[in-house]
Length: 124
Image 1: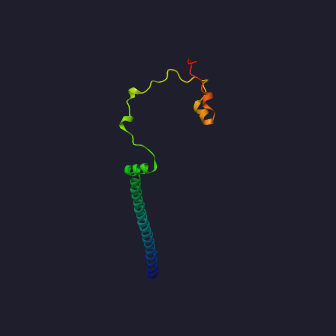
Image 2: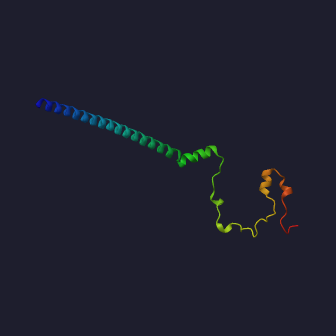
Image 3: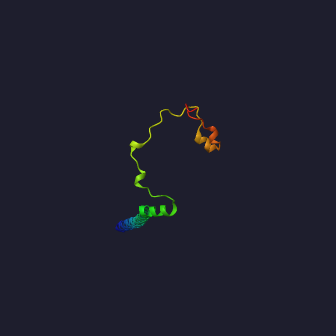
């Protein structure tokens, strides 16, 4: 009877030891997975920081101004080019009548603009 009890206790100890080993193995694997994820997160944050630095370099107004001067034929805006709203022309009294030909459309279609423009009313 004591021998059977010893065998049962030994089997229980082996089962408990294997269960503890399984838990330890899974926790070690999960810890490695967490460490790998933290490393990936750190790499992604570094990549984001690099991209932000590149973006701020590319988005620099000084750099854009230099590129515009090098590649575009723009002139610098003078202060005398601005005017107040008081000097804007008044809105036309009547809109374009419905039967009037479209001058811009004629230009785009390649039609002769001189033949398609009708003189304004009252100028005949």
